[in-house]
Image (cartoon, rainbow, N blue to C red; front, top):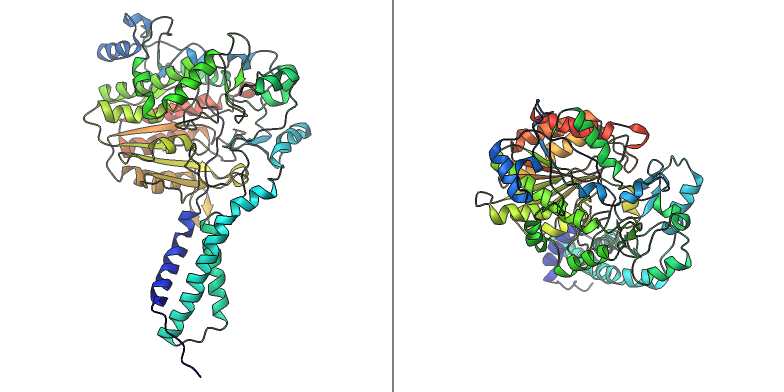
Length: 562
């Protein structure tokens, strides 16, 4: 029997195989999805603030005297959080609160992060189900599948050779084992590792922001060629139903806060002289100038009082009107004002922003978000405050904040942690990262500088849920995973992308938090980070039929600082 040739690459190949296998989970990270969120509001209360704070806010807001922002109402505020509100947050998409607009569909349809609409098991309306599933059931063409799978196939074959051939020879040469039966298994494991690492088992995605099938009129088809589609209720009622970011959401919150004597600082409008130059100055810390200009001109092109338009053909639930750019820019300024307030007074602040921010990427708006005020605020604090060396961001919206992750992924002084639900919507749109939306919701997606992390919760999870005998609910995710990571580098400021769609009553997720759980969240954040905490409103949609649960949850959160 001829002696078997010895291959010096055996040991190295085995080591490489081990390393490749260990890297599979991290390499096969799932990419993000876009979702819908945030509120809109009405009038806010005015409360007395310290003169020093009032002057700081007035300078930022561009008002001429304290009466423009700070009222003379006496009384103890509900909780220790001061709220910031721009009137434009109530005008953005105010058309959707009109009497002719159909009620939103969210109680029976799960809206995923990537603007696809997926139907839950408890669908109440067959017509809504049909509209929601028409587009998502479309299969990609064979050519797209082959093109997407070729890299995975090539890497899988290479890994099979390295792991199977090299590993078999290494074990035979070193341990003198005859692996006639184990050899094929090693080849299989090698191929499987390479295949999965390159996303071979992922579903091929056609569009990042797929949408329900709608029948557009001839005029809408013509408008589509101009990259916008004017929404006409008569023609596109089925489409409008899925736009759940409506002003009434913020009104519900404000009604609760006003009834609880909360401190709310209402900024003047731009027509009244509000200075938004700071927001403009720092916008490019998160967005390209090209995108900022395209967004501005798109909003200005919508005739005033003439309905709303989709931001782009790829945005099924991201809409704009003539007031949207001003509202989005004001929301960024609200984040900045809240940061200034917190650092000046050593007390937490909450920006009641609309539109929201955590899905807005550097070169595109999506998921109802236009400008990323959270990311801008983080950069602003680091750039303008010498005492701020590091900023941490925790995202408690029920959906992954892909936009924030994309904006901070190359900036080690910033750390981002998202706690979100894994939905069937995400499972249906797993894809490789792409330039305009690089970060995904999977737990292996940590970004190029490893400063972004995710924890993915199963549907049905509440504050405490037993999983395999261990309590690993929302509390575990927050206190044992998110907070340790965010505190690791001793941050000087915590920003909170604060969504309330993890509420059990909210139809856009299957998580099961209760209003009182948000007080627990606040208490844990206060214990870990003290008073240097700034919140900004993201999702939360359980406002229909007079429900107060959304406002109650905001109020409970604020009471953690009583």
